[in-house]
Image (cartoon, rainbow, N blue to C red):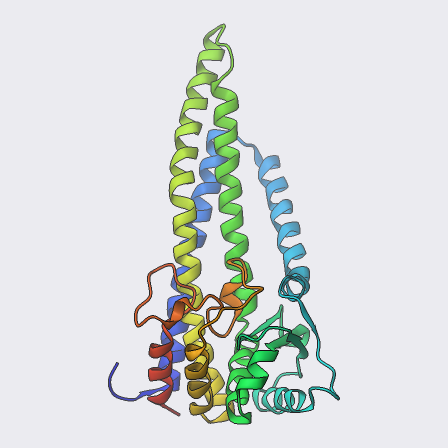
Length: 307
């Protein structure tokens, strides 16, 4: 990438791309739901029940996803006395961003990294590893915290939760179609009704097989694409909040130079962190399934950013 570009150009471009990805996933989910209803000859009652289930499912994840993320990543509350500088940085960045101060957590791990969680700015948390605190100076720590606060202000955690919910529902529809197809297709055919049921089962089985093959791939691609775009956006927004793109750029260099990996890292939460906890974003180029853009590309964009 050559030349300087304005913050608002990056924000507009990334928001447009994220919207396109969400629309594409919504269309795919809608087609799967319609196919399931059509093949199973659902009435309006079944659609109402499915709608109630979806609402309940969404609310459950909406209110518990932050607690689950903190628990899975073994984050513990950061004492204000022991981690005074961290609290001070989080408070000043939140003030600059115009949001309430998030709750502050630490993760006992020597790998430098951080993540944010929470359904909205009023119910948000920021967690950093002890390795990050040891490796970064104040300016670099401020850049990392600004990146995470940007995720909170941009509602990225909520967005990725929605993507995960939609992907999970698509997998659920696939499994229902597949299991119903097997059940309907293995019965004994004593009459025309049985033969009709067997034909329906065969159709459902074929649809289930197709969905089984393409759903995980499409979901992984869309989820990774949304995650990468929001990482770029959080970099730019965080730099704007503190009016300094170099703190985060230098922090990413240090993170990229770390040779280890986060011990508590998992594929389920990898997209949440400032940098890929497995170190996969240290390559000059990344594949379509990567949740983070290459660190070199992020650093380059930050250093060419103008306000």
